[in-house]
Length: 376
Image 1: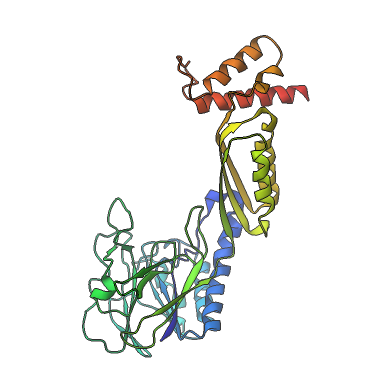
Image 2: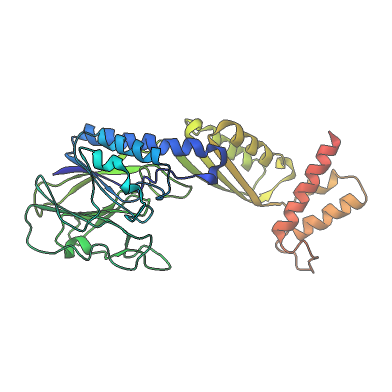
């Protein structure tokens, strides 16, 4: 048995967190879905399984439902889809769209009923409500293998932190239920779960296209090959993501460090498909005080999306250049006070409005910037 496991397409995702780039991010999710189908066809997969959250929610535009149905139909072979917690099977859901009834080869498995496939059986675990504390795989009957047994589920594997259990799946579910493979959706990072014998019989495919900064190893699908009942599955990640979400965290310690950050940005290939989250911290020298603005300009002009967080940068308390270039009088006195308050080692009383070194540091940076603008 050879099939492609994918999940969490979340077509219709708003992507408001990346502003004007959101439209491109939304379209790329459809492009990545097409790459999943191309990968399945190229690999010679007999069928495709989509383990929940195909759509962002049940309120997506109905034209998107038709586009996804057409895309899945284009595979040519069987495609098996289960509803997830974002798109649960319920009255008025996307799964009532006529596109699914008219499809020849796309099957929405909305019942907890075994489904025969060449070489074995699928055990679908569809979701009917956004949240639940029940194990979605609990219904699967354990028993002697009659061909290859594959479960399709959507939920949280034991050990993944959540404040409240949400469709909890035991870590040993595949072994306990006698499944040769348990394909899961819900979490966006590709994760393989080896059993005591080292065999991977349970895995998250992860989202096919990264959705936000900080997702670990997302943008994949999984090709699963099983020689026969009880055989060790061969699980191979296939890259399907088209956009890169890059987090750069830099601690500034010496003059010129921000120049190194610029070099890192210069080294990023295909900037038109890159989204950058730049986080700066540390001590800023007066010589480099224009660098954060320069970095912001580069992010805005060169990349699909870029944002910079410089709120943890503080003027270096050992750098007298912050002070000596200012006119004598109240401005220099104010800058001297702010520089002292920006030092975490400052032990004196703090005035209201400068309750932390970060606030005082930002105030000094803004004061210098205003004075620079006045000079020009």
